[in-house]
Structures are given as structure tokens and as C-alpha cells.
Image (tube, rainbow, N blue to C red; front, side, top):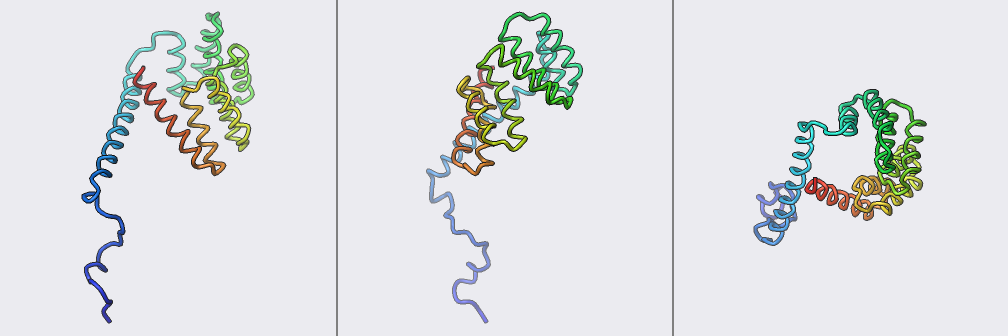
Length: 198
């Protein structure tokens, strides 16, 4: 028994979309988006690549490099030395924040929380420490508390991309997709600007 209709239509894969040739404006929009995406990815990737080749200039940069390479004990020792030498509260907050990351990588969650709280005691508007505390809440499934930390970080520094990104992740877990997409897109734009300004 033969089906009614054009046999060629039955042999093709089902597709109800019109080809782009009939919709020039859509092709242009897609091309523009693709170009912007490639530029932002290349800027971010090249920045990371060159950062690996550039020698750290300060003891803090050397400590962060050790942390990035997975040497948490070495980074912690270097950060302790930085902390002894630094008197500026903002710089000390940065050091405590990275010490918290090193402690967390070593499995010492209580020491990490202590360092992040110390960073906030030195600079109450230090967004990275607020974001790291929010990350712990997010990992524990305490989404409302995590969102509070991320929102506080954004109030302190609305240009900090990781707070926006992690807020988007928390929103997504709650099923608040529109807000999640908005925050993740904003994080992507902010990271792109940060890469261009570096």
C-alpha cells in the first residue's frame, strides 16, 4: 500500500523550519551572534593562555599561581608571608580570600570560612569573599542563603562576574529560568569586558 502524497516528502527528515535563504535577516543575526561569541571566547582564552606565560610580578601573584597549579600548601605558605608583609586592609582582604580558597582545597572548610569572614571584617564590601561563602551554601543545597550572599556581593560590586554567574546557577536550581539566563548572560558580558580591560 502506497501512502498518499509526495514520496520524496516522506523520504526526507521531518523539518518544519524554513531554510535561512528565505530569511536573510535571521542569517545576519545568527552570524552577528556567532562573531561576537567567537570574539569573547578568543579574548578569554588568549588572556588565560598569556597569563600562564607571564611571570608573576608580586608575591601575591606568585601565591595565586601556585594555587592555580594545584599547590594549595605552597600557596598557603606564600599567602601567609604576604599577610605578614601587608598593612593595607583591601590587600589583606584579597589575601584572606585566597587563603580561604587554599584551605578549602585542603579540605579545611572551617578555616576557609574563617578566612572569608576575616576578609569581610577588613572590607565589608569585598564581593569575592561574599561569593565564596555563597558557594558553600549552594553546595550544601541552601539556595535561599546562597542567593542572599550572591545578591550582597552584587550590591557591593555589580561588575563582579562570578557573583552573577553563581546567582544564575542558584536561580536555575530553583527553576527560575528567566532570571538564571539574565544573570548568566550578564556574567558573560562582564567577563568579556574584564578580559578586554586586562
